[in-house]
View (cartoon, rainbow, N blue to C red):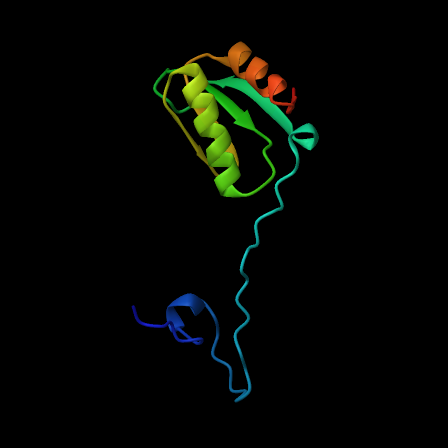
Length: 114
């Protein structure tokens, strides 16, 4: 695998040319938040039908932490509910109306639930 050049132009699209010879482009790498302990999480469990063709999903929002921890929590909830879903961009989507079951599972694991 080839090493990436420190000044790869594809990573700098939209940047204006600089005449400064010592210019070094500063990449704005977004660092993920540190995962909060379950007791400090304030998760919101809601039913959502918007833009889903009339189908209902249970939407869990408000997770603060790494994407891997979010996916692990999503997998736990999907397994316990016995349905499909996804976990990305700080949200967990569970197919169907499982609000009460999800709230019980999260409270049992020590998460703060609204």
